[in-house]
Each structure stands twice: as structure tokens, then as C-alpha cells.
Length: 195
Image 1 (cartoon, helix red, strand yellow):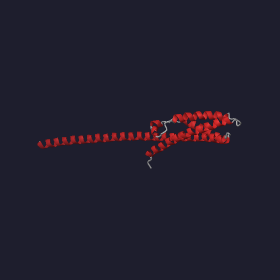
Image 2: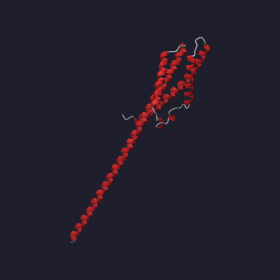
Image 3: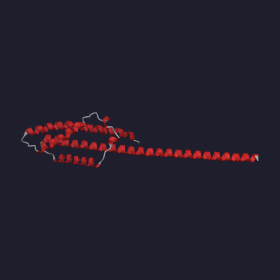
Image 4: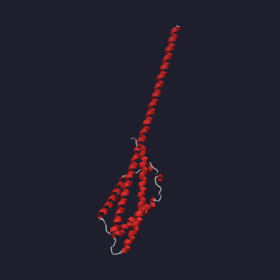
């Protein structure tokens, strides 16, 4: 009887240990699976974040490049008028087309770059709004002056010449601003260069 009790107790003990070990292995396996799913989810969120950040940077670089092209075309148009005292239809068309393409891009695209980047670190010129306002004001004034320019009145041309010079100062600052933002973003994007 004693032997059968020992066998029964041993069997019971082995069964309990087996169930306990199986339960612990199952719990450990489920814990590992849940951690793996959490890590996969974090990785997916991180990948989405990085993709959106890269897309936002690319959008800003495209917009800034178009701003640079628009201001460069406009400056070229005014410089040509300053030198020839005539409207250049080709340059006028180029400036208008660039401006229209930029306007269309800005209307169609929503840019969330401020969610991903702090541009205060990128630019030393904090007077961007002043330069933008002055450049836009001068564009409007120059367009009116050029449209009403009479070649027989030198007074009108000297005002145009002065405004073109002032416009050039603001445009150079703006173009440098856009270039520094682009450079800043390109540097930031190299963090995600995996090749």
C-alpha cells in the first residue's frame, strides 16, 4: 500500500509540476507575443511618423524652391525693365507662370512641417515677415509704376529704379531665408538616410 501511495503522490506531484510548467511556458509565450506586438506597433507608428516627416520636409523644400524661382523670375523681370525700359513679355510670362504654379501648389497641399521641425534653429534672420511684406508691397507698387510708365518722364523711371533696388534687397534676404530652410531640412533628412 505504501508503494502505491508513493506512486500516487509522485504522479500527482508530476502532474502538478507539468501543469505548472506548461502554464508558465504559456504565460511566458503570451507575454513575449504581446511584447512583440507592442514593439511591432511602435515600429509601425515610428515608420509612419518618419515617412510623414520626410514628406513634410520634401514639401517645404519644393515650396521654398518655387518661392526662390518666383522671386528670382520677378527680380529678373524688373532688372530687365530697369536696363531696357521695356517690358519683356517672355520674362513677364515666366514670372506669372511661376507665381501661378506656386499659388496652385500652396492651395492644393497642406503642409504640416511645423509639427516636425523647429525652423527657429534654421534661420538667423528673424525679420522674415518684414521682408515678405516689403517685397509684396514693392511688387504691387512696381507693377503699377511699370504699367503706367511713360518713357518721356525720367522722374517716373528714377522712382522705379529706387524701388527695384529696394526690392532686390528684400528679395535677396528672402531667397537666403528659403535657402537656409532648405539646407536645414536637407541636413535633418540625412538622419533617415539608410543606404
